[in-house]
Length: 128
Image (cartoon, rainbow, N blue to C red; front, top):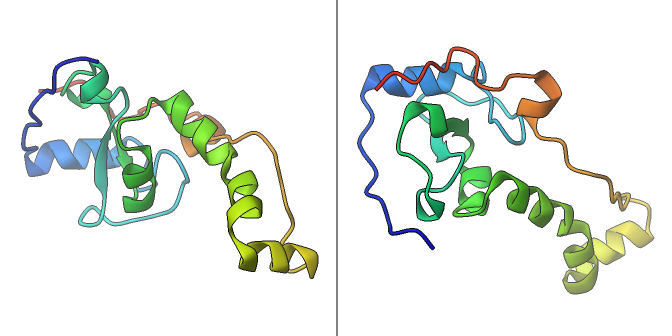
């Protein structure tokens, strides 16, 4: 594991650049948020050797950023894809809702917002 890198504080202008990369959407789930509620995710986590540069940052909602934590994008995808199985195993309410047809169990590959839209960082010049 790489040595922990200290996060730098972004300026308002830098936060705007990260926000603009996905046009005000979470890079992962695609939900819309404001500049004030956006969280900044390090695509390659700092703890895994990622750089603390704008080129390694994407906008994320609180839920995705919290869940991804120190996972790589691929590891995060795998964890999200495991969610239906975990819910079926551990959540009685979820299993009941599936049995009554209120929810449909769907085990399909996860495609992130940045992949669906091709928004691989538009407006995301690596300005320091």
